[in-house]
Length: 118
Image 1 (cartoon, rainbow, N blue to C red):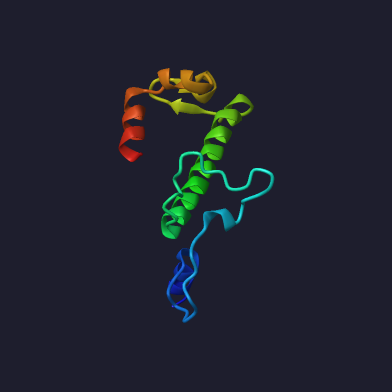
Image 2: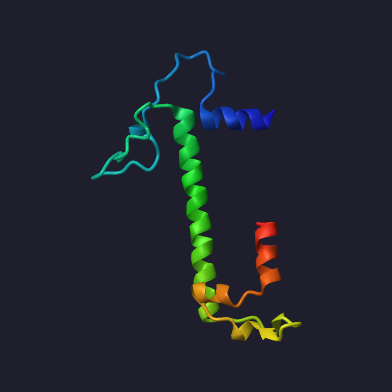
């Protein structure tokens, strides 16, 4: 199936009769002059292709999450939702400060919901 072919191409499979190639992270996409391949912690020293590609995918995922977090930190500086965050407590979105100070305004049950659904 297509999924197996994609996985084989991504992780490197034994689907061909050609001689197996050795994996060298210094030849991967993204290695550029003048720095070249930079691995100061030696995480790719074992030259395991599957581990290298998994770490690369995880790094991309974490980078995307960081970009969303940055947007989430910047947007409240310029935009606030209209209406109430907690109608029962009379707390409006406009009353909530920006940044980490907003945590002090979250109602107890709201914090419980954040923890329960995270």
